[in-house]
Image 1 (cartoon, rainbow over the protein chains, first blue to last red):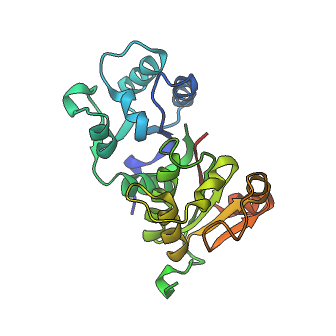
Image 2: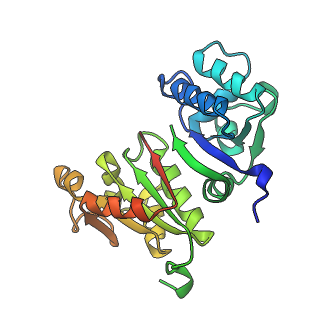
Image 3: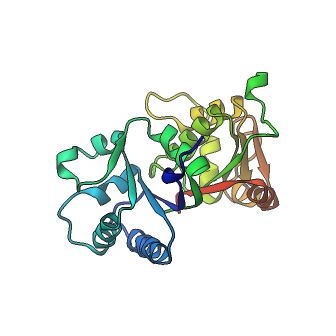
Length: 120
Length: 126
């Protein structure tokens, strides 16, 4: 049974790099608005989306991401894609969970823990 | 298809829409891997290939690198309902003779039915 503390009203799967287009920043801004309205938000970073968690960036998507992180949003990140990008935990912001079985974890969150889901 | 690979009336349904072709990004890999993993966990899974996503069905030969066509064949064998947009397929000269077996080339009304019956819908490639 899913633990209620792990459920979210909105899950956002991010597959694109933060500077690839405005899509990631816009989606995160939407998520921040949803959180401001009282919704619980979760982020899942996969493929080029893992770049969002790299510390020290100067772009709008990263700023939005940090705002969400500071509000305690749950962030899950694919280890497989992190390694493919040549990054390690030491290069990431604090507060993200790195998972090995990325598709198992993503399916569990999408199907059992999130009420709504958006992919960008 | 084994009995355990047949869709269940009791299970939740996931529909995945793929809009991007193979070997241009990871969208096809993510869509099919998600479909396979969801199916393994017992969910009913629909995979609809839309726009350039329809090209994935055309990969029929073996490769010595990532092969979304082979993963798609596994998905069909494991009971994932795989559809390809009829108009998108026709525009790319894709038909039942040059795509993998088990892919239903169908109208977008099928996608609407799948979306209506689904608990969650994921779109990869947008």
